[in-house]
Structures are given as structure tokens and as C-alpha cells.
Image 1 (cartoon, rainbow over the protein chains, first blue to last red):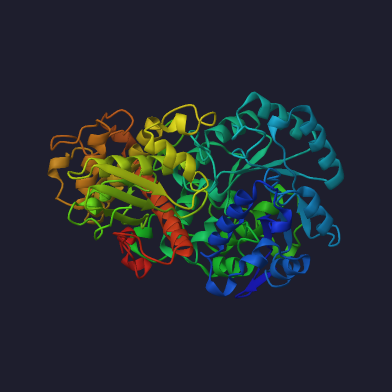
Image 2: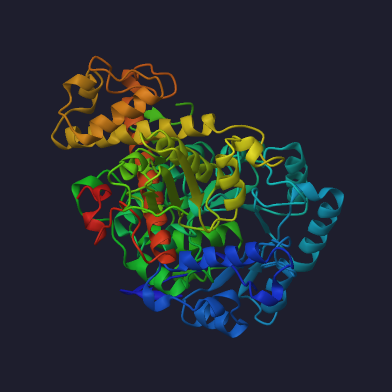
Amino acid sequence: MYEHNGEKYFIVDSHMHYWNAAPDNWVPGAEQYAKGWIECFHAYQGLGPPETHWSIEHFQKYSEDDLMKDVFEDGHVDVAVFQPTDLKEWYKEGFNTTERNALMGEKHPGKFIYNTRFDPRDSDAGLAELRRNVDRFGSKGVKLYTAEWNNGSRGYKLSDPGAYRYLEAAQNLGIKNVHVHKGPTIWPLDKDAFDVADVDHAATDFPELNFIVEHVGLPRIDDFCYMATQEPNVYAGLSVAIGALMYARPQFFARVIGELLFWVGEDKMTFGSDYGIWEPKWQVEGFVNWEMPDREEFADYPKLGTAGKKKILGLNAAKLYDIKVPDEFQLPPEAGTPGAREVLGEPVAGA
Amino acid sequence: MSELVTAGADLGILRALETVRDPELDEPITSLGFVASCAVSADGAAQVRLRLPTYFCAPNFAYLMVADAYDAVSALPGVRRAEVVLEDHFASDAINGGVAAQAGFARSFDGEAVGELHQLRADFLRKAVMAGTDQVCRPLLAAGTDPAALLAMTLGELPPSRALDRLRSRRAELGLPARDDAPLLIDPATGQPVRAEAVPLHLRKAKITRVSIEANSGICRGMLRHRYHTNGEGETVFVSEADSPDSDS
């Protein structure tokens, strides 16, 4: 919970991690990838305020106590959604698995939601594992890395028949939310893994699932926004967007948020700190305090008011995950500004 | 190794590298800070070392930059052989070896890639055309030009600017109309003029495409600075964001 100027914000961190990327977890023979991956993440942290930077050693492996303090005690977060990242080709026990998250989280009832993951290239065994994970951890969401390595394959598309089989199975198991990593990543080679066209197909064919595009398709926000405008069940996950830009590049941040407000709208944007890349404290406080610059070049962006900030920081994700939000944080119906479904009289779809 | 002379101003090696762009960011690799060093020896051996913001930057774009740098430097008068090395990248060996052997992208990543990168390059040139459209239209709109009036304008009617030169050059690269009589607003996929009713949406798309490229460029510059503390050859260093040409404030 964060309180500012008499307003109370219920905070859901819808995208965070508990990883072990220390050398003791590196797969022999893949050390350079394991090391390169975490150093790349660490460089992203460098885009946050200097006083929030960690040493690489701390960044490789932070403790349960660190997480509880950074996210809940200092970071204002009420409920956090763990997003797993297996990466077992590089990390012996995985980078940040559902199991690791849940083992930690079960000591803190009510604080965490455990998303799981699947990979359609894992065939029947993967479906069985998905079922086990949903049973064991009560997962309502999955995090998918369409660009992840798997046994010689360098990625897949959400629109592949194999992926559809998994999406159907996930839906039958009660999964509601599909977080898709479309953002800064390592691959593709000739394929464009940032391409969001596969989400477009899947979102149309699975209208009862919600697709949260994490990192808003950075570095292709344009493609993401056209797509999201046309699909009512597509959301913009703000992880990285706030962390990488709000402090380091405030003018670009204002433009990116302005574009998202225009094309996607405040009802479909969700806050995620991407902890441990960045701590939530400065992101939550900074976003609550943030105002669109009062200058001509920002004039045609929708304004973001207190109601919109409350939605983005927690209420939208609370709806996606059926999190019970106390009355004192709720908004009256119809508060805020809905997103644009058409552009200056011209429907966006098909344009 | 032959003795290296001062970074090849004489032979114009830096000028040559300025013509090489990051296809995704649509900026020269020099001003982005990606050229760690460049020099030509007395006997005509050119050596270029490139660096990128992260160990895992997408290898397709990395390959294009290394290959383009190789071509640009090799074409210089007086250069008898060229070596371009990408440093500190997970695919350095495949890329450096592939470019040196003129193997093409697919053969350099045997089994991992099936095609060459012409389509990818064209896709990003089209994005550059959209972003460039916003760059030249924004000042006109700010000066009170009605958006509908842009529809009738040709490139020749626009005031001269670097942004306009850049837009023409990107359009020409794609084989799109770029002469004085060419319409300002065209669909970069087809080259056809934009329809009147589609102008507001076209301008909105141009704007977000520019925002996307510039935000990405901002992140890349920040990551590069975190990774390397020295300036690249020909790097444009901004003291603050307000100095950036992207900030248009």
C-alpha cells in the first residue's frame, strides 16, 4: 500500500522474480551464457537511480529476506506475482523456477501468486508438468518465453499448432492469464522474436484468455500498440518500461506512456517492477508522482490522473488475478479515462 | 601486425563507418558509440573493432552491422584488406568468421538460421520512413499547417532540413518515390499516396514509430555506457537528455 496526498494505492507487482544466477548454479560448458545473461540484466539495473544499484555479487543471488524487505517492507507492494524463467540450459536448477518461487513464498501466505510456465516443444511430458504445477501451486497464469532455447530449437510462435494445444490445455486447467515475454531478449537469429503477430492470432482464437505482453513489446512498441488496440484481451505489461526509462530517459518515458495511454488505455496497463532488476520502491513512488509534461509536444496524449494510476499500479492486475482489494482502495465505477478504440474517427482495425 | 597509423582520418575510415547504420535504431554506428577503434596501417590493412550494448544483442542486427562495416571499409581507396571484429558478444565467433569468409548470414549460423536478412532490413527501413515522416511533419504541424494540407504536399515543397534529406535517402533505399514531385505522405509498404481519410491514423503511426525507435535508442545508449566507460570513435555524447536531438524540446 502506498499513500500519497491523501490517496491510497493498492499495489500489485505483476511481474517479479526470485532467481539464483550465482556461479554455483551455472551449467558446466554454458558458463559464458549464464554469466552473460545475468550481466546483461545487471546492466539494465544501471538505468535506475544510482542509489538503487547493487553489486554484481548481490545481484546474482539475493536472499529471501532481501526480497521481503525490498518488495513488501520498503517497496509498498501488497501482492506480488512470481513469473518463472526456467533457462535450464544455462542454470542447473533453473534461473527462477515455479518451485523455487513457491518454496519461498509458502512461508508468507497471501503475499504471492505463483505463475507457472510451459513450452509447447515439451510435448506430452510438458502438459503433464503443467497439470502438476497448476495442482500444486494453484497457478492462474503462465509466463511464456517464445524465444527460449529448447533442445536445439531457438524459439517458437504462439500461433504454432503445438502452442494452441497447450493454450487449450491451460485454459481447461483454469489458467486465465498468459504473460508473454516480448521485449529485450537474446534471440532471434533470422526470426524476429519481438514480433507480436503471434500474440494477435492467439488472442483472437482464445478470447477467454488474457494476454499480457510484458515489456510492451519493447523495442517494437509501435507493432505492439497496433495489435493491442485491435484485441480486447491484450494488456500492456509495464515491466522494463518504467524501470528502464522513467529515471534514465524521462522524456522518452513520457512519450512511451503517452502512446500506451492513447492506443491501449489505462484500463489495460499493468505495473511490474521486474524485481530483482529494479526495486519497486522508486518505481511506485516515481509513478505516483509522475505527470505528463505540460508542453505542446505532449498535448495530444491522454492525461493520466489518480484513478488511472491506481488502476495501473494494482487494480487492473487485481481484476486479472481475482485479488480481493479492500474497499478503501477501490474506485467508483467509470472512474478515469478509457483507452482509445478508434483514432480521430478512423477505426484502427484494418488500417 | 603492421604498425597502425592514427585512426584513419587520412583514408577516411571513420567517414566510411559513418555510412553504416544500426538497422534497428537507424543511426550511424559511429555516433551510437559502437566503434571501439578503427585504423589503417601504412600498407593498407584496415582494422575495425565494434562493440554493442550487451553480450546478447540480437545477432541478426549485429551481423548486418559487421558485414556493412566490412563492405564500407573494404571499398575505401588504399585499403587492401579489412578485418572487422565484433567484441564481447555471445556470437562473436560465428559473426566475425562468417563476415570474413563472406559466407552470408544463414551459412554463418548453420542450422540456426534459414534465410538472409534482406527482409528484416527492409522492414526496419520502412519503420525509418515512418519515423522520418513524423520528423518532417512535426514542425509543419507545430507551425499551424492543417493535417489535411499535408496530403497535397510534395517533398520539394518542404523546407530543406537534415530530417528531410534522411527521409529521402531512406525512401530511395527502398525504391520508393523520393524526388521533389513525390508526395510527402506515402504508404511505405506500397509507395502509394495515403488516402485522405487515413491521414490522421498515418500521422499517429508515424509518431509512435518514432517514439519506439528513439526510446529503444535511449535504452541502448544507457546500456552501452554501463558496459563501456570510454567513448567510441565518432560517438555523439549527450551531457543530458535535453541535448539529445531526439528530445525536440
